[in-house]
Every structure is written in structure tokens, then in C-alpha cells.
Image 1 (cartoon, one colour):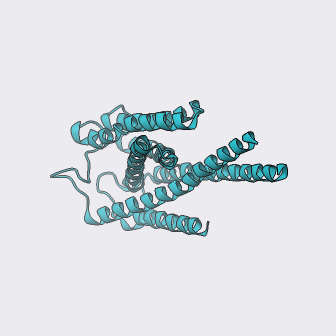
Image 2 (cartoon, one colour):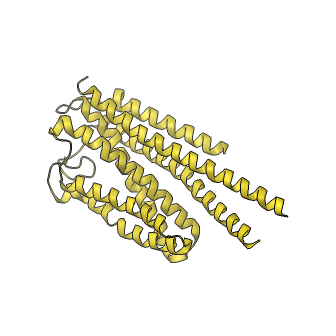
Image 3 (cartoon, one colour):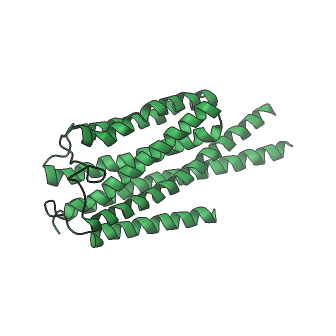
Length: 225
Length: 47
């Protein structure tokens, strides 16, 4: 328990420092001005969410292969934390878009694929509420999770393959793209902070899933008696 | 600083979502832990 509290304190300390760096260390962007500072939170959260979905995908594959319940617990844990991250991305994006583009939302490739990603993982979580039998629920959701992950590379590639409303990538965007060196440092610090924070949420949520398993075991034992 | 309201809204709402999610995890974990305790007590009483 003490370790989890310490981990939480480190994660919160890191995200607080990352927010400070985004506001006071990073230089102001020339065309967008101060509003561009949302980028450090928005993009770092998106990266953390996609990493979380990758862990979910690996856990789903491992469950299909080995049928060990803890892979199912990790899968649902990461799906929920990833969905929370993408919710934040879908909220902060329009708040940034309105002053810059003059619109809250448009159905461009990146925005639509991100929205579909959110819907897919919400469906993953809903699917689990529809099946009572634990092994069947774990297998069905693992299969669905593998399918849902197909959208993650589409989200990544959307701004590289199709030039629509969303800006072109500034990281791994190829020749002509890039960030000011100090902006890049601040961005990667924000990415690190959001990954540590997501890891903290994953640990907390994993213990919840474990507690659910303990309750189910005790209930079964009580029924047998 | 121009558009300060938008920046403030993005950070506040974003962290608000994470805070609510964390609170929901803590609440669900506490409920389950008390259910574990209740079941354990019942089983001990039955012995």
C-alpha cells in the first residue's frame, strides 16, 4: 500500500512539473500563440493512451494463448485507462481547435479514427458487462480487443497518409517537420509524465480487478458450503 | 496571454476526467474490499 502511495506521489509530482514546463519553460509558438501549450497535455495523453492500448493488445493475445486470468485483468485494466486517456484527448482537442481552426470538430481522418478508437474500447468495456461466465467473457473480450487494436496504427498513420484538417506530425513526421529543441524536450518530459501517470492508474485499476476475482472466489466458496 | 480561458479549460477538464476516474477506482476497490471482509466474516461465523 505504501509503495502505491509513493508511486502516486511520484506520478502526481511528475505531471505537476510537466504542466509547469509546458506553461513556463516551453517557448511560445509563433502562429498559434499561448493556445499551443495545450499540445503538451493533449499529445502526451494521446501517446500514453495508445501505449496503454498496446499493452492491452499484448495482454489480450497472451490471454488467447495461455488462458491465464491475470492477462484478462491486465487487458480490461488497460482498456479502461486507455479509454480515459482518449476521452481527455477528445475533450482537449476541440478546446484547442476552436480558437485555431474556428470550429470545434470536423470529420477528418485523424479525428474520426480517434473517435472510432474511443467507441471501440467503450464497446470492449460494454461487452464485458454482457457476458456472465468469466472464461467466456475473458475470451470474447480478448478477441474483440485484438480487433479493436487495428485502429491504433490507423490513428498513428492518419496524419501521415491523408492531409486533412489536423496538423501534420511534428514528431516522426519525416523531412521538413520538427519542433524547436526546447519544445521537444518539454514535450518528451510531458510524454514521460503521462506514461508514469497512466502506469499509476493501471496499477490501481489492476488491484480492483484482482479484488473482483477474490470476491467471486469467496462467493463461489460460500455457495458450495 | 491570449486564449488563457481555453488553456485553463483544457487542463481543468482533462485533469477533472482523470480525477473522477481515479475516484471511481478507489470507490469500487473499497466497496469490493468491504464485500471481501463481509464474506470472510460470514464464512467464519458458519464454521
